[in-house]
Length: 382
Image (cartoon, rainbow, N blue to C red; front, side, top):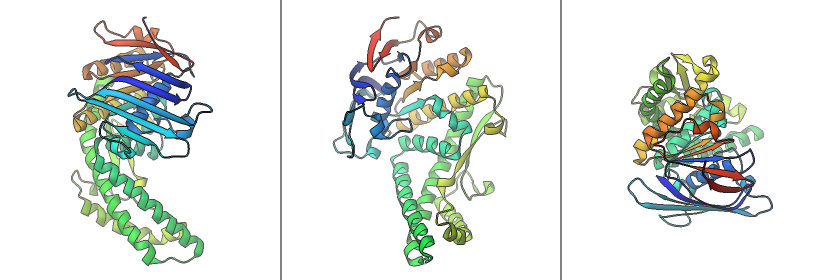
């Protein structure tokens, strides 16, 4: 997929910005607060219907405005035109339109324009909380599979309702099995679907991650990623574990935790408690990896994401790199550019100053520079 044009209205300090962009490298430079990251946020909104930063929709809107909108015009790898428009008015639901139609739900467009994002905030994938790694995997799988999005949304709705009933039972002192058991059965069924898809994902993703790390780190050590589902012992998590097997494990977990759930008023088992173990030479990276190794792990896991999505969607993902080169040495920066070149991906990069990147650009690279200043973006020659 290649974006040709981007139209931004009222996103942060952008009042109205129209950009015609390069099919190769698009390097946006400027001081902090000039609006360069907002360009990447806008592309993320067109892909996911929300920013890649942990912020509300209302906080993205330009000061004293009542709405934002993003329009992206693109073309697929097969040369098929694609466009998407996301409009958000304060207090109302988003209005989403694409080449496929109008009044679409967010889940309908996720994955249509696959995007891989790397920013300093994503360091938490390798050494943060389990929630950070679950969000990472959920975003990949949501772009790769509409079925996974449906399973995840349904599971979250069931979990929310079951927790509500458990909390009410705790406060009232009355636990009514007739009210809660149907939700327990739904939770187990939908949760098993989520776990089955996550287990299948790791089986395919882990070899790609290992290969990318070998390239980035030069074979100095072996990286791996393993799925650690809640309540399922490692010896029971076979490569081909079935949904029925997971259901039986969940039913056993429920029976063991039922009394504790009643006392605490919340659900104590299920995929909302899953984790993914990232390791180096079989030791946990979270505890043992150096800062440099964490950077190599993050680069590798993101390019493995790229390979996985390209394979599943039959479409080349767009790469967004937000201010990541300030934290990378020249060797790792060169590795990132090598991976970009090898994958022929359209890439958007933000930096505070462009001179450092110019040193790693190749004469064969297809690139454009854009200067950001107070919410305006201008193509420049350097």
